[in-house]
Length: 241
Image 1 (cartoon, rainbow, N blue to C red):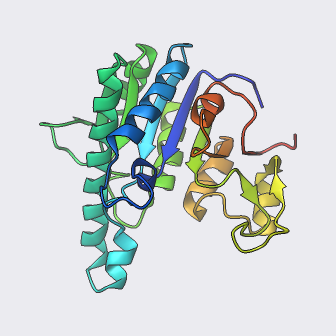
Image 2: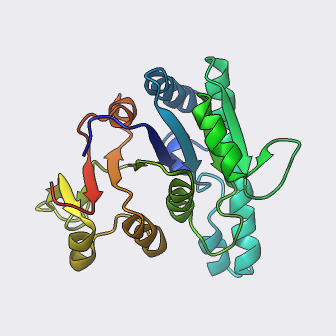
């Protein structure tokens, strides 16, 4: 893996914007801290696109499990990602990082529609681009959104920020002997049944040779370190280390 990249996609979970144990869906302090780390990486000339989940507000699959029609439940989840995207945009622009939100569902009063060429042009001009509303289609996760948008804009890598410090052979919360990988190939991850991303997202990354870096964003400064290419978490790529 290179120690630096030109264009990256950062995948954040919606829960990452919430203070643990808080009833608030979005913590301004956490969002501001994220924005500061993104700014440091952005100042190096890195082109940064962001995809954010909506799980701090809503989970479509869970709502469907409680009786809501799945397509409707997923559309509600897409709208949740728009709220998170606007919050991140506000935090970045407060600290003078030019940012554009592009939504897969048109809502011109608050965001641009997703247009691939325009997104690439924003990145080339030094703007952070936040992709909101998932793919615009039900039944697809924001992991898949990250993989799809990364493929469309020609990103060098996807950074998946999680609550664990990489990819393990089994759940480290349940098994004290769980082994963390520093590097694993796509084929190895498949053969071992490792949970890196959902199946559709993983296949998109494998088919388009887009490495995935899974890292713990709760560790102070890890977001900045990951974005500038320092060694954090687990690298999943086509070739062995």
